View 1 (cartoon, one colour):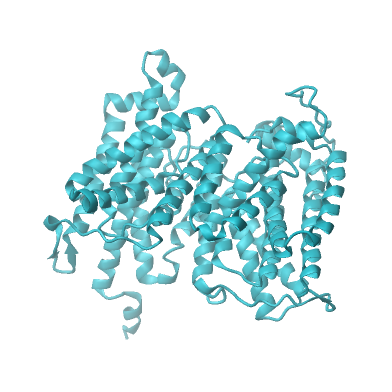
View 2 (cartoon, rainbow over the protein chains, first blue to last red):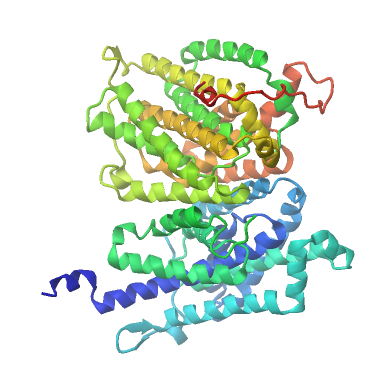
Length: 298
Length: 341
């Protein structure tokens, strides 16, 4: 009589395992779309290099481990700083010169940069991934009764949540964040008040890029460190950003996690659609609320 | 994107027809000097870039997902000709029709957003098509559709002869090019340019900008599909490369390097990039790296593109470096049928 239940309700371990995978993906979507949103707010460009910078973060951690013997925890700090400094150089040397042009040129320039960075790493390391072991402190798993939760994955979810909330706090609740938001609204006026907006722009870009690199380091033990890891994820993140709308920081975080979860659930119920479900949702959101779920109408 | 001065000064209708005549002569003579397969590939890419430029150069819409139409059509044509056994011309028609239909759906959704969002939305939709082609049964996954028969045009002309195939591709290119030139010089095209320059003003003049944008998008998608279908027949092969986001990026680069919003720019850009890829075919990822460098250089210092810089000199209209914009007077009445070219 209840035969159909077996079809409709998948076995619990599979269900929770995919839910976890979804949550992990969502954590990375959230961190990346957060960085994109912050950069977009102040620089008005979509940072196409974001995926490449995420990949750079992962590779940076890999270099630190294999060349210098520096482990995961130090990499969590060093890699974002290194990649962030690289981002600052990109902003100073390249992006600054096209700030007055049509914003689409920013997209094209960062797209070109992404091609360069990815091409260099593909030339060097091919398309296959390099393994990065989970730090010893976080190996193993704990039994939650209904499923096994690997410690590292739990750490990624908690840490990314913390990073997202900290970013939200800085932007929405501190004086620095208030300057930032003001400069987003009207940079000329904020400059007139004696705040160094160009430096803020540089630091914001560096910060957004550092966030991507941090996500990359955290992703290294889960996905393999591969030159293609950035371009695989960045297009999905773009869709996440379109769905959430870039108007709000909290919106970027929420839609990142939510869409990761939805993607995970789709893998349980209709695996064929799991790689396209986010794009379908994007189409629906465009139909119903073109400005995005949390966005303001342009 | 803003119009380059060259577009205002360099590409009047007469000049374009003069150049087109030269281009046709060059196209007819070319296979006797150059490798036909290279020329055919370059012509397909040129048509693709021209179709893309119709949107970016004349409506100001940057689509980052044109590979969906190009690659999608190439799959459909390959499948229709190989598995269904359709005649070549019907196979191409099927590819173009599917590309146009995709253009209708994606365009309808994408034009709800502008600027950067438009680019991201089109990119995301194209990625959806990519995943579909990766998973669908008929596309053959990583292998693609191989050994696609070229068949006989109209039942009698053997397309397996390299020269015959070449002239067929040239004809397809010229047809697409003529449609585009006709479109941008029609009253419909004038409205497109008006929307590019100042959409709110065009709307306030009573033009329903959404309709114009959508029609332009569909036309661009259909022509990109024609390019993709033709390419599938040239190489007798449809693969994931043509539907990948890198292909979308490549067509942007071709247009950028040749000159956004110039009639001949995309053609020049396509030939340049195809030549480069030809020479660097063995160099692996260096092609990607060099493409990235060209992107950066073009955006930083060379935004007018080759034709944008050269055309004013060639046309002998360099009297004023920044000519005052003299457009045709706005059309009194717009007929929707003007889009047909």
